[in-house]
Image (cartoon, rainbow, N blue to C red; front, side, top):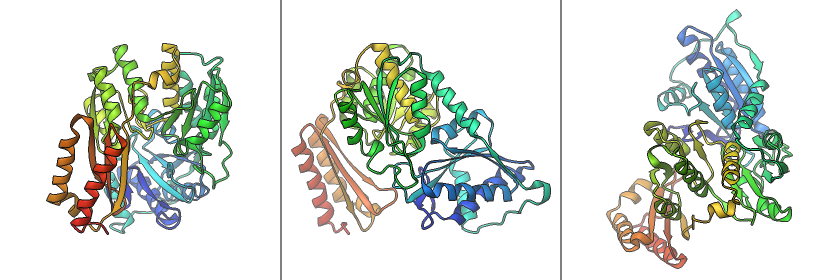
Length: 448
């Protein structure tokens, strides 16, 4: 990760950590890098979520792009996966999504995508950051070389059509609940499900610029759980602010996470001979219960660092078709280059209809192990992780847990924090081992 950009873009509080000036300069760089620097005119695609500040950053990016001679195509309020899809199929030089995902409204972010709809490569990100820090100058476009903006709502409509084409089944008579998180999916998701014949019931689809993710969406799944039960729905789907993740609620009000989705669709693919290399890609934060369930049906799995960026890189390198995170970022690489919440919903509907089973039954084989997680501020993440006594404590816990669970000590990517997590078949056991690791960190003087 760089000075400004993390695994999911440049993110921070709007006009404090991420400013209007940053956005202008990012636009300036991209317009030049893909355009004048290559002796041509660049085409950049821009989407945004419903945050108040997204309009500010949209215009700032457009200003920078046009000043460098590029044309900026504006999709307006739309989802991250829609920008990735349209950037790829409509031959754009790059895609830009303005969103801070599941963060509160006062945060925002700028996600950069390449012409293939994939997250921008590290080399290009390093050049962006060098320019942000004044490392070099970029010429200003003049006269006929100055860029323009193009209304490209047609791109969003094309993406909606693509989603509808994904379904192999009619959703007729299925009662589906959607929590749009007052975010980017609010104008898209209901239309897709209605077009496929579902009786669609939507909550949190009245964005006002300041209510995105507020007590709703995939980070507050309890609202959708109650909504599904109160209205006797067959299933519910909750998205985050930019709709690149999805969590589900079954007909009994049970939460179906990204781990459950990987199991359900992975098994469905295996049964049809579609699971290439018989492998699902997970992250190190997937629950131990998922691995036990996959073992029982003889499906292999890879584990990557936390972040859908790393999941996709692993999938692309080895040709895997399915991967994701417990948080609901699920990637179906045959159809998308990024997590796509609405597409994930459609895939869950497909399995339910193909197998003629409710979601609760499909998810039942994945029994989550109790998990205890403590975030502890430390003086130095590297020193704490490399301490021989800490390593010894982790090794001892690993040995004692054996096949009953696991321990994970992971550094936060953005804060001076270590995350100490233990999963075990008994909650008291997981608590006990977390406390033992924390005690060593404290005794060795690492806790701030």
